[in-house]
Structure formats: structure tokens, C-alpha cells
Image (cartoon, rainbow, N blue to C red; front, top):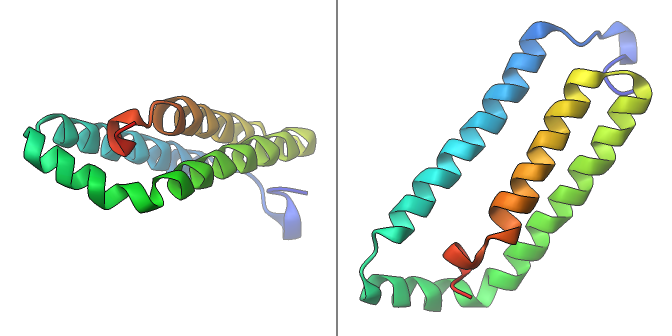
Length: 109
């Protein structure tokens, strides 16, 4: 049912939008990672103190979105909407491996 409700068809412009969204997320993540890497020790210590109260919640929230992306990808594949399925799998891998798994650079652990 995903992508085919009410006569909707997966078009190339929708695939392009999904790819641009994933690419934008990757660019923002890389930029923020480099910004954190350039911090001096005092700025980094202050950042770690500020993020500590919400760090576990943020990591759990990101893993939640990994699971949601995988589930939505499976549903899209079952429905036959392969471009969305592939885009969601790429997003899940990016979130799971890139942001949630390697979170020590922004959580400070």
C-alpha cells in the first residue's frame, strides 16, 4: 500500500527528493563532526557537560529511527516500491552505523 494509495505512483522526482534528503543529512553530519573535531579541550569539555543529560535519550531516539526505517523499507519492498525501500535502507545504515553507532564523537563517551 505504500506509495500506491489513491493512484499515486513512485516517480523520479520523489526518488530524487529522497536521495537529496539522505545526502543532506550526511553533509550536515560530516560538517558537525568536523566542527566538533576542531574544538579546543575547554570547548569540548563544556560541550560534553551540556550534552550529557540528553545523550542517552538522543542515542536511543536515533536507534528508534533505524528500526523505523528498516520496518518501512520492508513494507515498501513488500508493496513493490523499490526506490523507497532502497532509500530507507541507505538511511537506516547511515543512521545506524554513522550516527548512532559512532556517537562517541558527539556524546563524548
